[in-house]
Each structure stands twice: as structure tokens, then as C-alpha cells.
Length: 319
Image 1 (cartoon, rainbow, N blue to C red):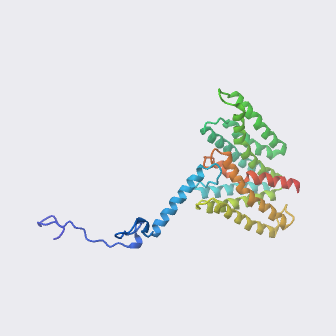
Image 2 (image 1 turned 135 degrees about the horizontal axis):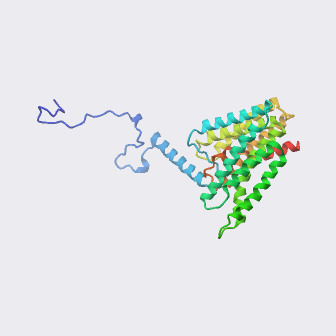
Image 3 (image 1 turned 120 degrees about the vertical axis):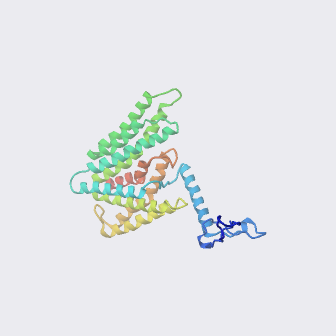
């Protein structure tokens, strides 16, 4: 019996030929004919996909190392976390609408702003800068909490950030370090996250309908930006997708004209501000960090509001 090692003088070790399906070939290699150069080898679909994935990975890595870029961190359950954040914000807004006050919205955004200040300061500490981590985090959280009570307390928190940053830099002064530079880094780490969170609370104090519209439009931008941009090899498709989503929602809102808006043109104007300024806020967050890929997920949670939040608040005060 062929292939048996018992009762037989000859052992057949040759494997029977196996049938292969060309469509199931995942190696990406093509048959090389005699005299054929490597650049003449036809590329299979698998090989093209591998090359595209490699190029995308290189571009993402370059984007993370860049000073100004939009970075999409896809590690972990980002979609579920984003949805959970949206539910938390919606619940806090619902409490305000139901007459329970702004405390839930203020505490929620204060917590995120405080963590953003801490993470940003730690990111700079890794680069051998000396921001005060505690001052940056506490001041960023204090501003939206003060805004819950009145606008003046939010301003006091911002001034307090500057004063506390200078005091901490003087107390921790070391040889060869400029305390003004260290204080500047502390202000940089805590100010912008605090302003983004404070603007949401103040807009809600001014008019809850405007806050709902702002948060809905920003959420629409972030959803489109992340879903498309995280799978794109360039830096433009994500923001464009977010802008398209904002435009669609703005046209929908212009039909019903929710308060405090008085006409469709006003709705479209405020929606256009979100579409244009939300990506600028993302770039501003990258500029705040040592590099765009620095670990500061809490800052990335509010980065779209860094510019558009204060602008919305200013326009509400003027109109």
C-alpha cells in the first residue's frame, strides 16, 4: 500500500498535488515569466490593497507627528464612547429643559475640561517643559463651574489661572528656567479647554435652544468627520464629510426655525459658522499640544468648540 511504512519496502513520500484556487490566493504575488522584469509583474487586487493600506498607515503616522493636523484615534471603542458622550450631554440638556438647572451640563463639561488641562500639561511635561499640571486642570474645570452661576465668576477663573500660573512658576523656579515661560505653558494648557467648556455653559444660560442647536451641529460635524476621516488617507475627506453633515442639519433646522432664531437665514448663518470653525478648533487643539498625536483625548472631546463656542456666545450677546 503506497505511503505505508509497514510491510512495504518502498515508502512513497511524495504528496499528492493540491488544487489551488487563484481567487483565494492571499499572498499578493503573481507568476513571474522567464525574462519578465519585476516592474512588469501585474499587480493583483490583494497586492494593490496592501500597498494602499501601507500608504495610509504612513500618512497617518506622519499626521500624528505633524505640528498641525487632524488626528483620528481609532484604538478602543471610540464609536461607543462617542455615543455615550452624546447621551450624557443630551441627558444634561434634558435636565436643564426640565427645570433642574445647569448643574449637570456644567459639571459634565467642567470634568472634561479639567482632565483636558491635566492631559495637555502632562503631554508638555514629557517634552521637558514645566507647566503646573494641577493649576492647569483645576483652572480649566473652575471656569465652566463659575459660568454656571454667572459670567463674572467665569472671568474670575480665567484671571485666576494666570495669577496661579505665575505663582506656581515662581515657587517651582529652578536654575536655568524662565518662570514666565513656565507660567505661559500652564495658561496654554488650561485656558483653551476651559473656554470651550465655559462657552457651552454660557450659551445654555443665555438661551437653552441655542445650546441645543450648537451641540447638535457640533455633534453632527464630529460624527461625519470621524466616520469618514478615520478611514481616509488624506486630511480633507473627514472635515468635508463633517461640513456636509452640518449643512444638511442646518437646512433641516432652517425649516422649523427653533428659538432663539427668528428666520431661516439666521439658522444657516450659525450653522455655517460651525461648519467653518469646528475644523479650525481641531487645528487649534493640535497647536496647543506638543504634536498633533499627543495623548489628550479629553481635549479632543471639546476641540471642535474651542473657536465656534466663543463665537456663538458673542453673536448671541450681540443679537
